[in-house]
Structure formats: C-alpha cells, structure tokens
Amino acid sequence: MRSNRRMKWVAAPAVLSIGLLLAGCTPEQQRGFLPAGSTDATNLTPGITGLWVTSWIVLLAVGVITWSLILWATIAYRRRKGQTGLPVQLRYNMPIETFFTVVPVILVLGFFAFTAQEQSKIEARYDNPENVVQVFGKRWAWDFNYVKDDAYFQGVQVQTDKAGEPKDGTMPVLYLPVNKKTEIQLETRDVIHSFWVVEFLYKKDMIPGQVNYMSFTPTKTGTFMGKCAELCGEYHSMMLFEVRVVEQDEYDAYIDSLKAAGNKGQVEGDLNPNQEYFFGDEAKAENE
Image 1 (cartoon, rainbow, N blue to C red):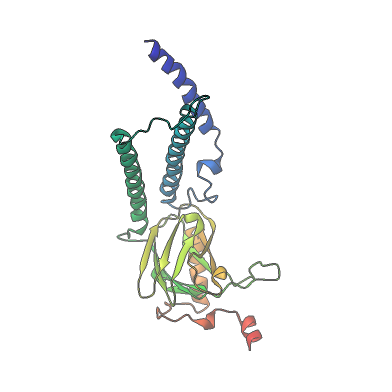
Image 2 (cartoon, one colour):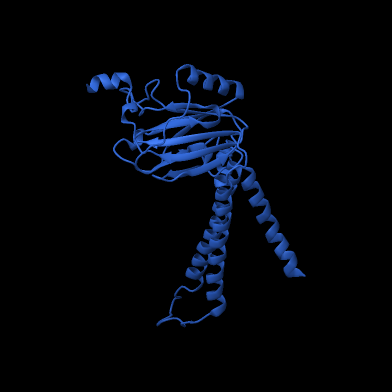
C-alpha cells in the first residue's frame, strides 16, 4: 500500500509537469517548427504534421530514456575509493538483449507504416478530380497545362535585380482554386527535377519518360513558395515558382486572361527544354 501511495505522489507531479510543458508550447513548437501556414495548407498537411511531431516526441522519449540509463550506469557503477582491478563482468543477458532488439524494430516498422500511409494518401489519384494540372520541369523554369480548362502557361527562368530580388514577370505562378480536388501530373523536359511546394510538406521527383502524380485539396487561400528540390544544373537555385490558391472567381478570371493572351490549348510534352522560353525579351536582346 505504501509503495502505491509513493508512486502516486511521484506520478502526479510528473504528469502535471508534462501537461504544463505541453500547454506552454508555442504554435511553432506544436507544428514541429514546420513552415508557417503549412498546418492547414491542404487537406493532407495535418496528417503530415502529426506524423512529424509525433515522431519527434517518440524519439525524444527514447533519447531521454537512453541518456538517463547512461547517466545512471555511469554513477551507479563508477569505481569507488579503494577499489582495484576490473569490476564483475556480465555476459549474455538475454532479456535485455531481446528488449534492445525488439523495441527498435517495432519503432522502425511503426515509422515506416505511418510514413507509407501518409505518402499513399498524397500519391493516390482521385477518381474524378475537379482540377488537373500538368506540370513540366525544364532547365530552369516551369510549364503549366491547365488540362480541364484548356489553357497553359510557359515560365521563364527567374531573373533577379541587383538586390537579388526576382524581377516582375519572371516568376512562374501556378494558380489553383481553393477547396477543389486537384491532381498534379509531373513530367520533365530534360533532366531530373523535383516539384516542391514548401508549405504543402511534400515533394515529388520528375523523371524523364515517366509521369508521377500528386493529389490534394488546397484548403487555404494564399501564396506559397515553390522550388525545384533536385540539383539539376547550373541555375538550379533559380528554378523557383509560386502557387497562388485563390477563390474560384479569381481562378476563372486568370484562365480567361491566359486564353485572351493566346495561351489556349496545351503545350507539347516533348523532351525539349524550351530554351527559348527561359529568358525574357530584355535578356534575349542582351544576349544578342
């Protein structure tokens, strides 16, 4: 009875301390220091955030236990004053060896299973997506085919001013309507690229001769930063783009503006970097 009471007196402060610690977490800490705005950027980012934060909590708990055992062994089995020679040597402690084999295997399998589950959600294709965008990566820019709207955008490599800021009109922009089931078809015109919208918490390689897919529903309007996440050549760092998630009316107006500018139809998917589209007219004139 006394031992149970002692355990309660020990457990109660520990539980209270943990509760106060978690309650004092900032929003940045609660999302595991992932990019601001990523928690609800799409219908799938909450699951990715939960996997990330839970993984760190589990790993931190394992670390605390491991560090505590190391410190305890260091203190409990240190050489005392007056002791000489080697301490008693122990071998083949099967329960401990089994524990330190089984637990890591369970943790690895658990992390793999939950990661595969979240990945399969993103790469599973909708039966009837409301919006389909075909994305071509190229050295060092992007082309976007708005498949269901029969319009396209061809990007140029981002040009910067003396301060290193992107010049107006050189940043490729991908428009997406909010709360619409969206399928992204990923292809490349030349080398391997990788499509990464930072706040969407997922990136997917673009491999020559292969079509990869991402599916999600944007759930929050705003502008999100995108970039190529695969080292693809000299100007890899300039292979940037933006994703603007907007209301349906604004999205329709943008599609109309593309068609009015002559960008009606779809750009071809040949393995061709389209170098002529990399630089604006001003850069072309300078090169000539």
